[in-house]
Every structure is written in structure tokens, then in C-alpha cells.
Amino acid sequence: MDNMRLEVMQEVEPRLQGFMDEFLVPAETIWQPSDFLPDSRQEGFLDEVREIQGAAKELSYDFWVTLVADTITEEALPTYESWLMDVEGINQHGEGANGWSRWVRAWTAEENRHGDLLNTYLYLSGRVNMRQVEMSTQYLIADGFDIGTDRDPYKNFIYTTFQELATYISHKRVGTMARKAGNKLLGKMCTTIAGDEMRHHLAYREFVRVIMDYDPNGMLLAFAEMMKKKIVMPAHFLREAGEEAGAAFERFSICAQRLGVYTADDYVDILRKVSAHWNIDALRGLSEEAEKARDYLLKLPARLERVAQRMPVPADSFKFGWVQANGQL
Image (cartoon, rainbow, N blue to C red; front, side, top):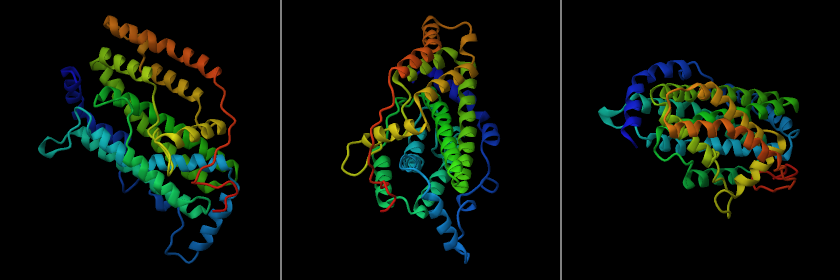
């Protein structure tokens, strides 16, 4: 990494406590998974579980596939934390530990609650083969991921800005679908998780904005390079037993697009929104290379829209070991 990036990370680092106060919530006051789930200490525990299972029967096969994949994605937090802790400028060791490492740990701690909540709900629902889900989670963590950022903080913050907003969209829409099917509990759970994702998106979006104040050329080049590679989802190596890495993710993505949970149009919309927030069209005094990167970024949404229009969502039906078509395991 060039010295400029490291200097910028060090310059911004003292502000991290302020960002944590603004965008994260203390464990004592933020919601916890048990706030949404039946209390096993109470006599009515089994009655509440039966209610969950009754409501679960009203949800479609594609819906359950999408919810399972979302859950596995959230459960793979160890991969994401270890990746971010290795980014240049983030130091977690000894006396050199800095605000960036404290942010990563605190962010991970908040995110970890999402997988805990959704995993427990899947277990109680009676609609899911939990052993198959657990194997896919273990595979995903063991396989890791390659999101094309290497150890570059600029690229990683572009990625997390984009990805957190994509996750917000997905959880919010799953919650809306659950409520429409009469499942108020699951709808509330997913909507609440989406609220966390939005806060985290706003934080990473702010990191990029602040860094762009210091080094607009470097950040624009990183932004353009990430978009040329395309932002891949963190679970892009998702698989089931006996499959190659990524096989289940391709099938799940089609299910999610067919449901309208996350589509190519959403990808383009996120690109437009973050570009507008960072005012990349108004940046001045850029290098020639950064000017070219900006031109590319400003033209990219229209290009991606044209591509999406030529690529209809496949109508293929897929089977997953996680969920069976009739809900009977």
C-alpha cells in the first residue's frame, strides 16, 4: 500500500471513537436475540414455538431458501472480521492497537447478533434441515472469500459501504414479505436487523467521504477498480455438501432475484446513491487518471441498466438440502 493511504488512515484514526458513539449502540441498550424469541424458562414456551411453526407454513419455498442463505451469510462473521483486521492501517496488536481495530470488533459484535437470531428462528420453525444449514455455514467459513479488496482500506470501505446497503435491502424486503404472509414476528425480526445494516452502511459511507476529503484521487481510483471487478456478495462461495464452492450461491441468487429480494436494479441503484452522496461529479483538482475514473463511474449505471435489461431472471426451479418443497423434513 502506498504511504498516502497509511497516512490517511492514521489521520482519521483519532475520530473513530466519535464514529462508534454515532453509529454503534452499547450492548446494554441495543436489542438482543432473546428479545424476539420464546423464553424457554417460561411455561408457555412450547405454545409459542407451535405458533412460530404454524406461521412458518405460510411462507414459500423460495422464501425459505433466501432466509436460510441470508442466515448463513450472517453466521460467517468470523471470516469478515479476520479479513478486516488484516487491512492496512488497522492494528489490533498490543500497545499499537488503534481505533480502527476497536471499530472492527464492535461492528462485528453487533453483526453477530443477526446470525444468532435468525439461526435460532430457523431451528424453531420446523421448516429447515438444520444439519444441512450448519454444514453450509462451516463450509463458508472454511472456504473464506475473495472480495477483490486485498489489504487496501479504500477498497474495503467501498465494499462495506456497498454491501451493508445491499444487506439492508435484502433483510427489509424479506421482512416485508413475511408480514404480508401474516408472520409478524419474522417480519419484525428482519426489519430490525435491516435497521442495524443501515446504521452500518451510514458509518462506512462516512469513512469513504472523510477519506475522500484527504485523498480524492486515491479513493476515486479504488472506487472505479472495485466497480470494474464488480461487488461480489460475501457469501459468493456458498455451497452445500458435495458441491464446489459457489454452486449454491448461484442458485440462491436466482431465487432471491425471482422473489425481488435483491436484483440487478438494486445494484445499480446503490451505485447511484453512493456516488451522489460522495458528490463525485463535483470533485475538483483531480489527477488525469482520477478524472478518467470518475467519468467511468458516472457512466456506469446506465451501462449496467442496459446489461440488466438483456438478462432476464431464469425461471429454473432448484432444490436445496436446506429446505424441502413440502416443508416436511
